[in-house]
Image 1: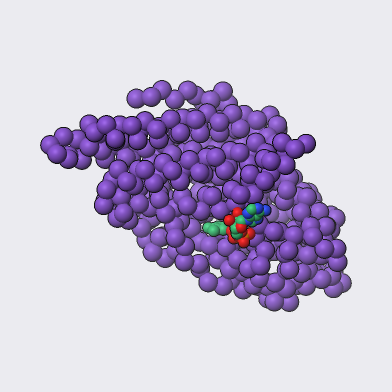
Image 2: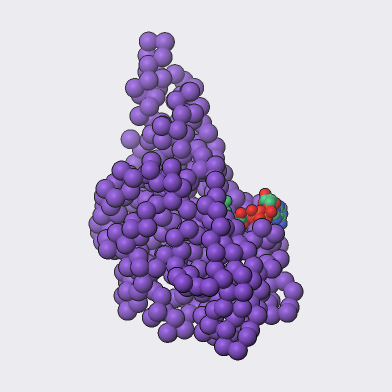
Length: 385
Ligand SMILES: Cc1cc2nc3c(=O)[nH]c(=O)nc-3n(C[C@H](O)[C@H](O)[C@H](O)COP(=O)(O)OP(=O)(O)OC[C@H]3O[C@@H](n4cnc5c(N)ncnc54)[C@H](O)[C@@H]3O)c2cc1C
């Protein structure tokens, strides 16, 4: 057993939360995961159950219905969720991302209106940036919000939206100004229940992460009150997105580091019991060397991610360091999970084996949250300064 040092930011309260979260995912998600994968989304009620268990919006102040915790609380829930090998709902998008956009940029009335409902699971949140013609290049967003009296009339289409199927509240990136590029972008919160002109498209068929809903969204002359602009000033959307992205990327790295250890533990168990040429597969030098290499990568990843979490807690996490964490860890996950599949032989290719599902689920880590090529560009830009 390789000792894993407890990070400085971990305390007894977080340990308790981690245990509670682990039990929640084992009890409420593991038994349903296969069915959720088949239907391509979790049951809507899992959101209310997670809210009742105190797992939503943990790092939002209590005055807005949240748990009153900090980023460390989000971290231990993300780790527990990842280790459970279940999806069902993207708490990272809901609590880790959208809730913090509202907390950081929302007016007092907006915080009071949305955060308590998000914390209880009454409202499910999504963020809709990506469009068929604008992914990495967010400045090419074409969804337009045109003012008409005290409403915006929004037209456009979004794709690949996590939680998009169940979303009651969508943070939509839309063009409010005539300026080209990022300057004319704003974030507008859309309450989807009974909203005329709002339409969900297909639940998308993904390579992995089958139990998380990922959907297309369409807006056709959708009238949204102007007071649902996030904040009070138009044209701030691009800046708001750029400010929040390091947090989003670190959450991906946190999940990646947890995936690394889960994949190795799974494989270690397998190679110890798999007999080959009259001995356990673990006895072969290739197996030992490959697992040693994988464990080294996992240990480095954990150490770096723990350091980044400490920086985030001190409000010192910069764009380039978050980009390093996101890109390095997700590349390591790609290598390690691939090796782990290989060590499982043919069973590693069978979806009834967790490692096969992990292989498919992990691939998107190098693409979303800003692709790893973009992460390298951000790191290089910081080096030039
Ligand atoms: C499962 C899943 C969930 C997602 N969830 C959400 C969500 O909830 N909300 C949301 O808004 N979006 C979401 N996305 C979208 C995701 O963020 C985008 O897919 C991602 O930003 C890449 O955009 P794109 O797919 O349009 O690829 P493109 O932008 O077309 O990129 C294609 C390729 O070009 C490369 N490239 C781009 N720019 C550069 C450059 N400057 N230098 C070198 N290479 C470059 C990229 O690295 C990539 O390899 C999700 C995507 C997936 C797959």
